[in-house]
Length: 167
Image 1 (cartoon, rainbow, N blue to C red):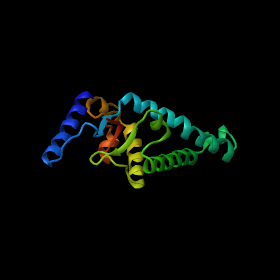
Image 2: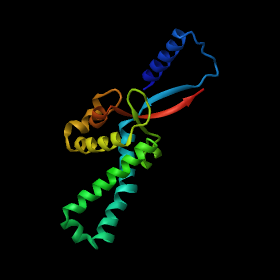
Image 3: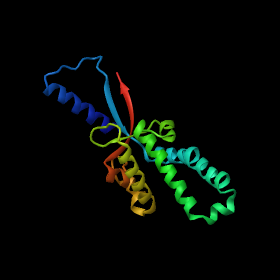
Image 4: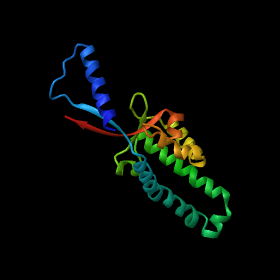
């Protein structure tokens, strides 16, 4: 992680020198730190409890009237995942963070520009996330990548970061 910070700072200083801009001691430098895999998992668990569980509760007990009707219905399960995906995509498109990601200071951004992603791209990222969770490759891929990006991040050209500003 420290190597990436130094590399990024070196690249930014080189760009400023190349563009004949001087670096002042009071310049703020944006440091990009890739999110740890453990923090991503913790954020996912928080999101499941804060967003997905209330959706399932409303579908099971308010709409269908009980646990047995919920377990018997396949449409209810699909509707729960679909509503969760739409809410998840709205959060990512609007702020780049879900409540769980905000709790762990994580943000989903474009892998090249480090800016927020669109709603359509965040929906596609959620669908790719469902595919990633269903495959063994998708689960273990972040252990072998330097930026800890999962299969759905690679497919959608996104990355999860921690962003902090240093003086």
